[in-house]
Amino acid sequence: DAMVIQNPRYQVTQFGKPVTLSCSQTLNHNVMYWYQQKSSQAPKLLFHYYDKDFNNEADTPDNFQSRRPNTSFCFLDIRSPGLGDAAMYLCATTWDRGSLGDGYTFGSGTRLTVV
Amino acid sequence: GQSLEQPSEVTAVEGAIVQINCTYQTSGFYGLSWYQQHDGGAPTFLSYNALDGLEETGRFSSFLSRSDSYGYLLLQELQMKDSASYFCAVMDSNYQLIWGAGTKLIIKP
Image (tube, rainbow over all chains, first blue to last red; front, side):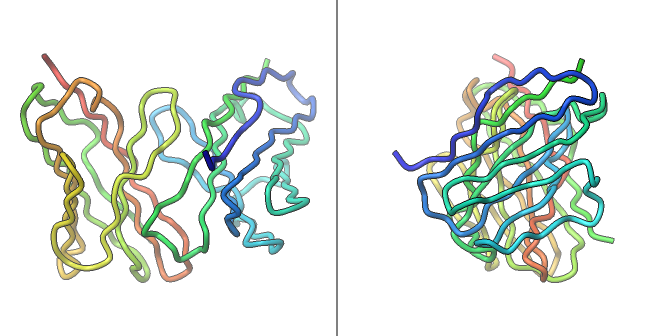
C-alpha cells in the first residue's frame, strides 16, 4: 500500500544533542510537510517542500532544518533540542499544494522526548 | 489575523448524532477540510467541501456555507471508536492549511 512512513516512532534525545527524524513516501507526491504537534493543540506547520522548493514558516525557529534529497525522502533536523521541542512531529504529503480533494496523507508521527 | 473557531469538547451518547461546528476567518478560501485524530495517532482525512452544501460519506457528513464562513461535521450512529479529536482546516489564498484548535469528542455508552 502506498503510504507515508516515519521513523522512528519514538525518539528520546538529550538536551542539546542533534537529532534527525525521517519521513519517506511511496505516493510520489510533490509536496511534503513537517508539522509539530503538542498535546491538545492543532498541528503547527514548520516548513514544506514543493518538489525541491523549500518553504520555511516565518515563526519556525532556526534550530529546525530540513532536507529533501529526493522525491521519496524528507528529513527534519533539530540542531540543539530544548525541552520545549518535545512534541509529536508529523510528516504529511499531498500531490499539489492546492489539491484538497484527497486531503493530506500523514505518517504515524515521531514522538520526541528531550531529557 | 486568520482563525478558525470550533468547540473544545463535545460529549454524546453511543448511537446518537453529533454536530461539530467550525467558523472561519481567513484571507482567501479554497475549501474546508475535516480531519480525525485518535489519541497518540496521526490525523486522518475525513472530508473536503469547496462548494456550499452537504457532502455525505457513510456515517459522516460535512456541510459548508461560504456566505456564513461556517461549516460543520455531522457524525451519525456514533460508535465508541469515534471518540477522537476532530479538526477543521481551511486552505487560504497562499495555499496554507489553517487549522482549528480541535474538538475532543467524548462518547458515553
